[in-house]
Amino acid sequence: MKLDTVELFQNEGYTVPVNGEIDYSDVDYFGDRPFRTARVAGKAENRGGVVRLSLDVTIGVETACARCLKPLRFEKEAKVRETLVRRSGETDDASESYTVVDGRSLDLYDVVLSAVLLDIDMVFLCREDCRGLCPVCGADLNEGMCDCGKTNQEDR
Ligand SMILES: [Zn+2]
Ligand SMILES: [Zn+2]
Image (cartoon, rainbow, N blue to C red; front, side):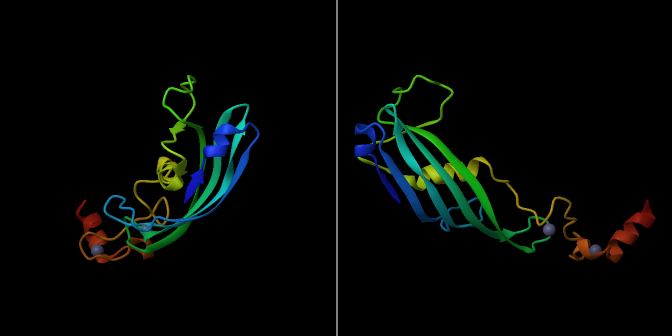
C-alpha cells in the first residue's frame, strides 16, 4: 500500500485519504506469525507546508496463549502519527516522530507495522492471571488443580 507524496509536498492544504488493508501474516514475531490483515484508515495532510500522516490501524492477531496454549484471536488497535519529510533533518523539532520519504511515494507497510509493534505485548496470554499448564502432567490449571499440585503442597 503506497502513498503518493508528490502533490502532498507541493501543495499546502492538500489532503490524501488513506483507506485499505495490509497483510502481515508473513511477519515473524518471536518465532510466531501471529499477525493477520491490518485495516488502515486516515489521511495525509499538508498543513502550512508540514505534511502529517495520521492513521488508525486495526490488526487481527491469531496466536496461542503463551502459558496454556489455548488458541487466541483478537484485534489490536494502533495509531500512526508521523510527520513526513523528504530529507532527514528537515524538521528540527526533535520531539516529533518523522519518516523520511525516499522517492515519490511512501510504502505504508513498515510505517504501520512499527506503530503496531510499538505497543504490543511480547507474549500473549488468554488472560492476565492464566495459570498455564502443569509442567508434570500437562493439565490445564485454569480448570482446577491436578494431582501433581496436591502432592507438592503436601510435601511442603
Ligand atoms: Zn492461558
Ligand atoms: Zn499435574
